[in-house]
Length: 281
Ligand code: PAF
Image 1 (tube, rainbow, N blue to C red):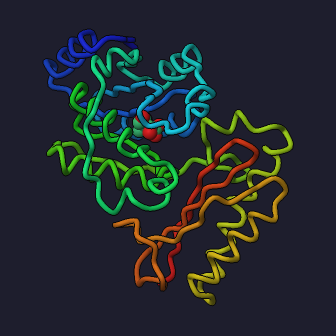
Image 2: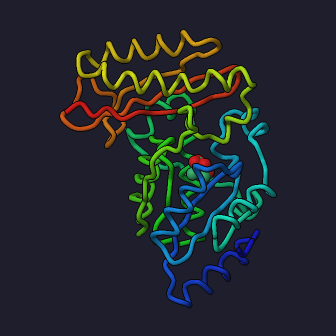
């Protein structure tokens, strides 16, 4: 694995791959890598000749300075995992490499970015669009891989790709879970032992609600899910929304196709997100 830190080094490494005619799969990350990230790398390896992974904690997508400060940074362990997973290029830039000057662009991301995370974390998705567009320009991949745990983020990135006119395929990959159902997240390491023991309750409640959806309205399922998660010791639901997966807009009735329930839960100051698909039809 080649490890590069500057835009210049990255561009030389990518040029060498392209000179060999190799297709490039790209996995952008903020580090603190876990098996979920490794599954994205595996998928990228299966579908491309070479894989590039970036590790960059992007300051412009954090609207809470404490969240940025406490975000786990584990560069050495990350590089070991990436090398073991067979990554070709690990890109570990500093802030000055990604933002040689401040990025003042405001993306017209539209309705997909207005609800849920967009409503709760003003500026977050604009920051994601800024960094991913910069990384896409630098890496110029054929395909880029994102986990469905951040379900809304994928819709936002697709919209950014449309705005910027990138010819890059966005590949959505299924959520990776611990054996007890907890969605893998870099934030899980911040849970205390007691919180960690209770955290799988989020997925359990969501999974159980899929059967309820056959005999209950959207409003009833939303209420029951929020109440059941709030009843777990130390959990506070920030939002639970059931949306159309294409435009992220809340649905009032079960659609013929798929709907997706997206939840954000606070356990102390740790913010966990998860989602579930409702196949009603
Ligand atoms: O999902 C993430 O880890 C980040 O939002 C991303 C896509 C790497 C951009 O910083």
